[in-house]
Image (cartoon, rainbow, N blue to C red):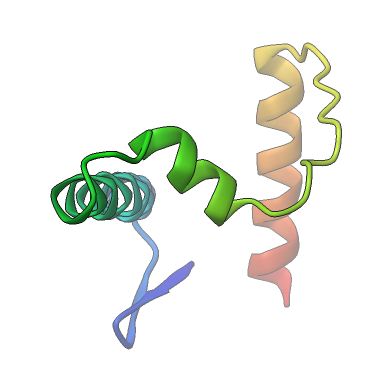
Length: 86
């Protein structure tokens, strides 16, 4: 379940769409900021300058592990069962 602008959404496709719209908007807004920087000061190396300003410290390392479709199904199924029994 996801709260979107005060409405509780249960439909998984609607939740996926909401996440997609949110992250698409974040990227779009970031691009607009970079373009505005370029227009205000064309001498800047825009995207590198933006990234330097946005991320003052290094990222933590990300360790990814391969998973199977079955493992994902088990995790989501168990999570769903926990939320519906509460």
